[in-house]
Amino acid sequence: MQKPGLIPAARHGRGHSGKVRQAGITLIELMMVLTIVAILGAIAVPSYTQYTRRAHRTDAKTALLRLATNQERFYLQNRRYGTNAELAALGFNSALSENGAYAIAITAADASGFTATATAVAGGAFDQRNDTDCLQFKIDETGRRSATPDPNPNRRCW
Image (tube, rainbow, N blue to C red; front, side, top):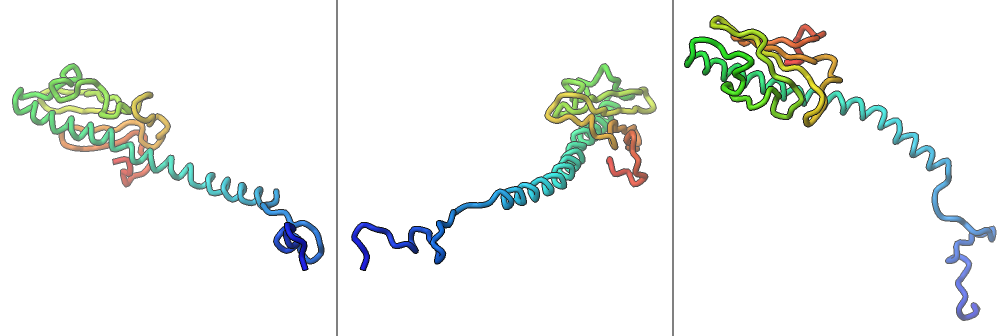
């Protein structure tokens, strides 16, 4: 029979040997979990960074395609393509893309054609200067697109 007010040994965490069992995790278990998390992080972070760089390239591509469309509209009204000084007339209040990650410039424009570029700059919603595959995008009056440097002949930048 048990004395009143005492807790039985099995409930108190004592095993058959009479030693008290500690609840929790060991240092080795904790180190194993941290190692696994570090390995997963080392794989995931560079992959995610590359994914976001590719996704943010759309800021430059969208700006250049919009500029090319507005250049054709400008040409119909003026019988020449707009210059860099006329970016406002072409629908650009500043010389930056929508999110400010690329500087938009018209490097050549006359009655026969134009060439426009989008170059990665510091600032903006994101910094694309580390995107070494596609630092600068170009488009001309024929719709020909290119990127500098573009190591892939399949034009993965566009």
